Image (cartoon, rainbow, N blue to C red; front, side, top):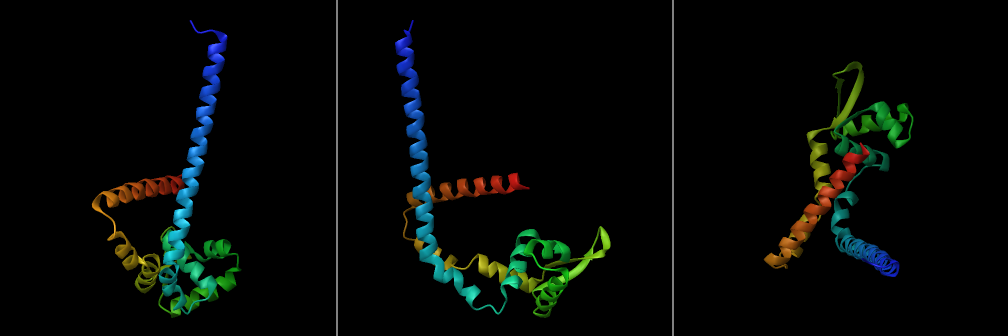
Length: 171
């Protein structure tokens, strides 16, 4: 039978080990975030090239990004999200329609509501923005061994799954 003193030492050791685990977790998370930041800076110029060549205003780009992630939205949803009046949003969408980047359509649930979504050209543009820098990343990955690539693949899958869980929890 353990004495009270033995139990106290055991609890102290458990608390210390838990504190060390938290410290290790925080240290590892900080190291991962630092590595991610370094990679973002190394790839920033190639990732920003498609953005720099665009002739879009910031509100127009925001709309394209929203539609890229949401699929479609009403003018009211877009104006509320971007923080502009419905009249201003109508003008922004008109210009995007004129550039063949979005299309308007009827809402199947309410014929009075017009939905906005990316056109095929808009989807192509957004895909180019999202995948910018992939050739450089391919070149970087080609420098790794098969064993190193397996580690990166597993880590990437874990991070992507956690990001999907986070997104689903927010919905």
